[in-house]
Length: 141
Image 1: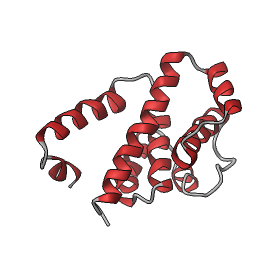
Image 2: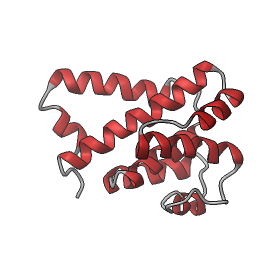
Image 3: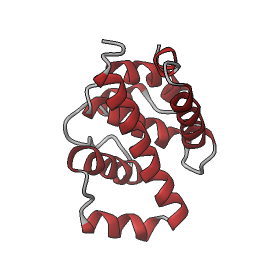
C-alpha cells in the first residue's frame, strides 16, 4: 500500500526506494537492532501499519516475541540488553525530542565509531520519515 501511494510521484518513489534500501540492506547496523529501531519509531509515532509490517521481520532477524511486545511500553524495558537499551534511548530522543542529550551522545560515541553512529541516526531518521508519511496520509489505519 505504501509504494502504491509513493508511485503518485515517480521521483519521490525512486528516491525513497534508494534511501530505504540503503538503510535496510547496506549498512552495518545489526538486523535485529535495525528492526527494534523501526518498531520503536512506529510505536512512538502511532504508525501501526509500520509496526505490523516489521514485527515478522524482527522475529526472522532474531528479536524475541517478548522484546517485540516490550518495545511498545512507554519506558525502555529491562528485557533489552545494554546495547539495545542505548540504541532505543537514541531512538526515543530523536523521535520524541529531536535533540539527543549530550550525555547520551557521549555514551554512543564511546561505544560506536562514526560510521555506525551515522547509520543508527540515519535509520531512526528514515523510519521517522516513513511513519510520519504513513500517519499523515492515513495509510494502514
